[in-house]
Image 1 (spheres, rainbow, N blue to C red):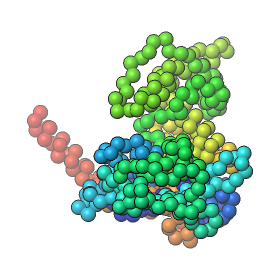
Image 2: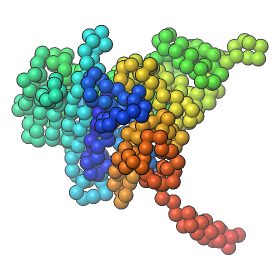
Image 3: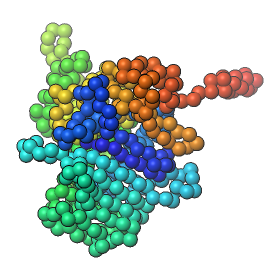
Length: 438
């Protein structure tokens, strides 16, 4: 689970901004929306929603989480001299356009459920330019005090990076280039201590981001009979008209455009994923079944169809699901359902998290979300800031206040400023010019 995430100099986020999922004051309102992954006093939100005008920076915050994952998981694959692809600094200021990007994240890594051990809390910091990682550190909290796992400063090489005394159990010092994160190199090595591999695999396997227009799903899940049956059952329970899903091997290999830049193992995974196609059963008026291909289903049904395996897996394993425009192509009731699933203690037993952006103010309900689960982004002079509804005066914004109505009235900011009279003038001017030409 992510406790908090601090971003500096990434895209429209110029100045240091912290996106916190830490529950400072649990209070009585919707306590079930809080997880305690270490079984102690540190409460973490199960879901958080981002609101804001178009181009205010919501997507950039979610992309920053994706960039962090790239540094942790993929930067170790870079060859000497390769650029760090997620280096996208704030370009509207001379002070920032060539400066490092900085990420800091505090998080819990779940332990094996069979081991009956609590999740461990970590904090990872990294700063990088286009060609070089200039700072990197990982600490953990075996007690109330932090303990260093490794620390890398600007001039450190793989020979001079320092390690903490509790970082034990394998080979620690291994070669890396200046554009590789140590965590990426060490996490992908079989002979390094399990602790660093646990962190690496947590981000590699359990963090999934879905872009606003992406139809992303779990790789090769159509080969898993149990998962197919669970997804079919879910779709039948939400009034899609689907009673069953069948899986059929494609007769002809369809033309698939795959980038040459992708590693070979990813190309093969994509080709394997396209080997099968789903068929959706709908009951006829006589009680028989008629099979429909995916192209006959609605966009909302297909989005839920693709999303469902990721939801099942996240809730089972304790993953983090990051969704840009949660309700895009989906009925508001379906979006609300997904939030409820993550907040429900009967279902979310693995401390899974949902982080999403949306424009749907109906989801901004005091019956669904706490104040600290609602965040806003604003952009002024090209610079994004983000803040929580919980930052407002709690004597005025109470847990049962009509959040969505007050947001629509502009009380919390995070809405577009529309010059309607200017638009009217624009249309009149354009219309007058066209009328003269006619």
